[in-house]
Image 1 (cartoon, rainbow over the protein chains, first blue to last red):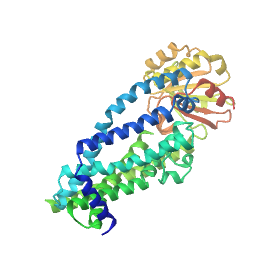
Image 2: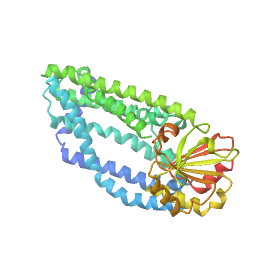
Image 3: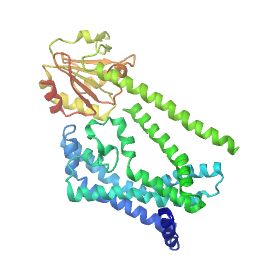
Image 4: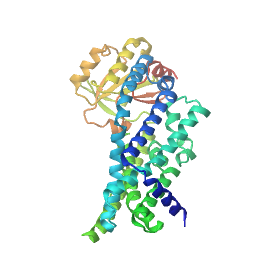
Length: 225
Length: 173
């Protein structure tokens, strides 16, 4: 029995009590809580003032802070919708491969796998919160934004990285790789294929789409900058 | 059909990645070229909105620091920056200020009158009639400020609104 099989057995036990709606609600609650802590206890008004002091007057920054304070509640409210869109896109990409390879997994199950796998991305955000709440006081927005733990981005001095490389370098991280593995375990659970075959499916569908997306973001950021 | 999709979909992905990759490298080369080009005052040709005559880099006063502001009359941040300069206009007397916009000359004149900047000898409002500013100074949002010292060397580039104190600090370097 390999690790993925142990994981699947544990997951099978968990699935006896699994409710997609409750899982989604709990996931969104966690994600919104993380954003709330980040916005209110780490990215304080002082951080805004220090970040923009060179560029804007105090009054202008105050105006900006007030606007952000109003808009952030709207963003929290939008979080479930944004995640629904993300899970749908990931499930659609996987479902396209499902159709082509004729694996008969179905969109609904792939949507659940995308949703469960996404929980891995709560972990780096949690580490970021702990880091800035306990170990380091945030001074500027750039300092908070550039905290990309266990990524290629974190291996460089952020001032040395070209703007257009920020996204691909932050995307290449351990959590993203773990996400691919969890997707593959989910595919294995659904299809009873070997782990390697499931991973190949993820690489040829999700990872290809991610590569296309990353290149598109670089293309767009260079066009707009 | 599914067999065809197995070929078509990867082909589309490869084509798009290759196409965008090629464009990315072309844009990076252009960015490098412009970054090197703006280190010294680049040659330019715009239209002076007050006289209707051609204004080039050759018309700049030698031995004076220059502030080139790329703006648009409708941009709120540009309006604030112009208002800030207008309030401290005396501090800018020993520098030359060039306001460049691709908006029409009527809108530019109205902007310069609104902030009482048109009557100063050291301030010129220019129209980018041929839409060439991005090929000279690079793609920039508005406002963008380029500060050149009296030797014509770039000392600072502000993307977005810049505080008046910061502009003066770099002009005085």
